[in-house]
Length: 111
Image (tube, rainbow, N blue to C red; front, side, top):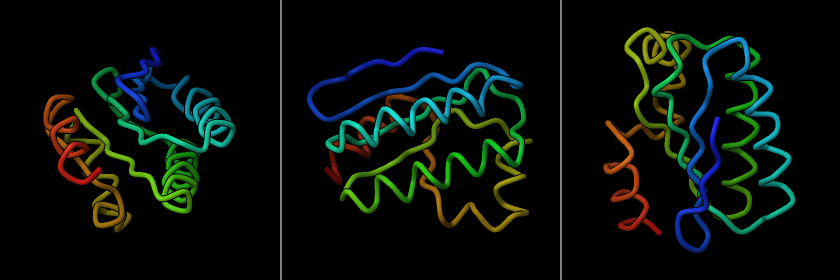
């Protein structure tokens, strides 16, 4: 996993493959709660599938960022993972981007 500060107030997180996604998301939640001043892009390029614990941590991150007036965008989400979000009805809750560049562009237009 990698955490990159991209400009002021923006973090890009590249997740590792499962089974480490959940723990890394939990770490990001702690980091964001301490910062309280950033938008987050989560890059799923190394993730093929997610667990319910990972989704739970993503929901916590999304809600925390939203309460702080910040945004979360998920990018490079694999088809199997995107299907999990769709079946669970979470595709309408999360914002998705095709890749990191598209996510950065979306952040510039909304931030």
